[in-house]
Length: 617
Image (cartoon, rainbow, N blue to C red):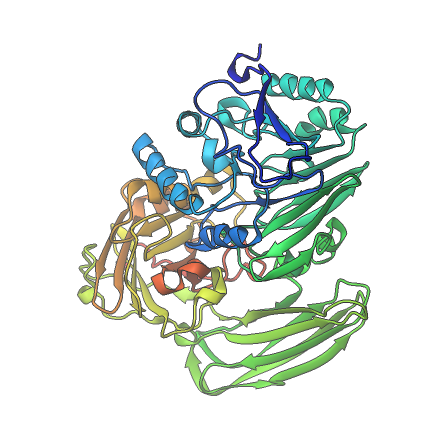
């Protein structure tokens, strides 16, 4: 039954520099075969009280250099060994050669570590049959256990469901329960797996939890790139943040920081500290209760600003309503400063408020232009805000962010004349929509430093065959790694039936995105595009010297079929992916003309375009 993970007892003597009178501790492990899921069993130091470290996600939009930095810093701390909880490589490639290249790159970083390293797989490592096969070939079993100093280390595969999807296999469950039954009297049990089933898949977790209920136990996981600490029914749960994986890096208050866990095992149980790469943090810095309280900040919805809707295409005067929510049970100090486009005044333009516990502040901001200005060229106003919670016995909690005030109107699509989709924009008369201050920046706003970093213009037109979109970017760094998000590209998002009640299958077909990039592969398109776009759509991209030019063409026949002679409006958004090698540690930034449709700043009137009537083209 357990042929994959045969458990013939093996005792490994550890060569430690201990006094002659000291008893040499042992690791007991039960994995046969030449491949072992660890780098070494030469434990550095092993008294009954010992210290080890845990590292978490290195991938899911990895940021170069962070994991290597963690290995270097762990060498300074000299733990007895290091545990992992998965997502060590990026995966999401389709050949063994590419996977081996990723593992080779990872091992270059890992090989600087001077103590043993124990592998646990994540979905990026084993989430498809080919990835699983390569993992088994290179690393060994995906679940196993060992005992050290009378502590049971139970390492599980949370992608052991059907075709290596989320879940535990029956075989793994039987094996795990037998391991626990065979070792009822260890002084502590530590469980390591990638996905936090107690948060994301309670039914899966309930298959194992009862077997852990009557023993001292602590469980570690990662996957969500967001730190949460919890205790339930005597079990302590640590869901870690990142050790190089993708994150907005908004700090420990939102659970978004690079760190390792430092664990000191004592007879009374593990003493744990969350160790950021620049310091040590307490293990309960973000409890499940705090995470729930701070959810409005995590979703960027604690501070909101209504759009200013304009009729006729020109803006002179309008009012936005600001709302600031204080979700905690103590006062919030709030400071805000409004940055306006040139020629536009804000009243008031600054705020300093004390918001009582649990209350919401509502106020208005009036924007006025010195003279009427075309909305197409008008940038959003930006509320730069800081929020501070002061604690008597702890450091203050400091938060900051931005909220754009978008000025919007309805837009008319002009008739196109002799446009060729070739990446050459000379056949476009005008690109009237100017974006030097995007309405939304995804995934990490810190990686975009302003219009000099990247900005763009775009235009929309339509003839009898296609609806066209052209985008021209100005970019201070146009280097590219030509891999996934690590390159410059543009995207157009289309909803062909905005605000209409249609059948689900029609809505799914009408909502799509198209990507264009010089070196964008078919696999990259499939990874990031929504519904892949209509048949017959065309894209093109070219390098212009100081940026890129992108063109998109959407078949008119497709739009006519979807709209069926009814409302000829579409909803449109444009995004530009800006990757700067010099800012690689901060990740990429995607600049959006209007708020992302799944973001808190989105509003139904955003990006509405009216197509020209048939017979006018």
